[in-house]
Amino acid sequence: MMASDNQLVIVDGVRTPFCKTGTDLAPFGAEELGRMAVNALLVRTGMDPAIVDEVIFGCVAQPVDAANVARVIALRAGIPRAVPAMTVHRNCASGCEAITQAQERLLAGCGSVFIVGGAESMSNVPLLFPRTAAEKFSRLARARNLGQRFQAMTAFRPADFKPRIGLQLGLTDPVCGLNMGETAEVLAREFQVTRAEQDEFALRSHQRAVAARQKLDREICPVFPAAQLEASNRANGAAVIRDNGPRENQSAEALGRLKPVFDRKTGSVTAGNSSQITDGAVALLVMGRSRAAELRLEPLGCLSGFAYAGCDPARMGLGPLFAIAKAERQTGLKISDADVIEINEAFAAQALAVMKAAQSEKFAREFLGRGAALGEFPSEKLNVNGGAIALGHPVGATGARLTLTALLELKRRNARRALVTLCVGGGQGAALWLERA
Picture 1 (cartoon, rainbow, N blue to C red):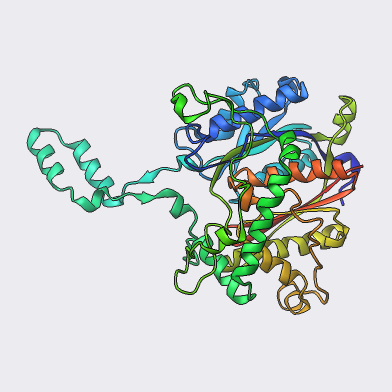
Picture 2: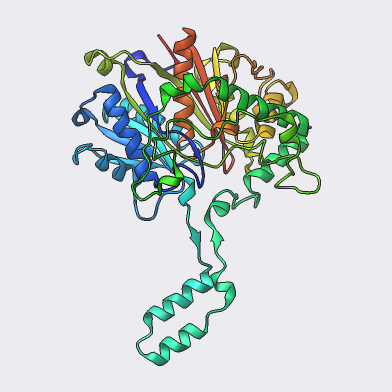
């Protein structure tokens, strides 16, 4: 546990709606989504941007036309030029990384007020030309006369114009060779997670997200459609004010009709029991506890401990178990100490495998080096407002969203502690412990 004087407190936060790729937020890049969230945060808190010491944002698919996207977000949001900004990237835990980077800076005496969060526009992950095409375009650009240009142009073949899908590449692990859905299939087989269990978990995510719409409204700032959009794409150009992933009419029957995506013959992971590919951004105002007291701000809560841990990339979905165990060693806090738990629903199979392994003494002995199981994730505490299967998973922003959602739920319940955890592509896990005074 960190000394109270060095604790990072989360004063407030805000996010854009989370919207499925190719829909409401598709016209906006990560830099613009992040700007919207930061601007809304400054308005909501009334904070003078001149007192901010640094801006730290997570982003996974960083836009090539907005290098160091955190800096672009900061400047476009009106943060003074003298305030530095940096982009962090820990795959799915990038939003968590932004928060814990602020904690580490606070401990090092390198600032006391930070704006942190994450932004992701998965709609705008580019299509890529194959290397052969790039080489031919390069020769064409270097051609000095008509003959050389003709020779370079005739070297192209149809295969040169078949794009490589950037999003697909980004969701494939370069070490184990599996895409994220295939790693979920590995866990479904190893932990005997049935298709019915996965679909039931997915249905509950939608039901809870729909039931929690009014609660989630507290997190969300409106996004107004881009000027270039046709009015037909919106209801008279109205603002986007809610997540568009939760399905009010979702049913077990509809989920059951979907075919497996990643293992079409024997698999059980479908589009319906996987997290949605989504656009969105989150911004949080965080600072040292003493600084908040100076400014007479009442925080939502504080970061009382955190841990990151590595695991097998082919079983990256088990990452939360390794991170929770590591955090327990550091803080003494157990799953049973949490009043609210947010685990990112990368896949229903993945989340269910984590829940099963957490109760296994054998798994604890063989993989975590401990004699006792980690414990149970009670349904009444877990993802009570729905999760990424319904709300979506804009990868760079999700960790910050989980943190904001958990703190607001703690406040509503007048409860004390929350555990935020998620798996990380590449074989890692993150666990954050949050606490209200």
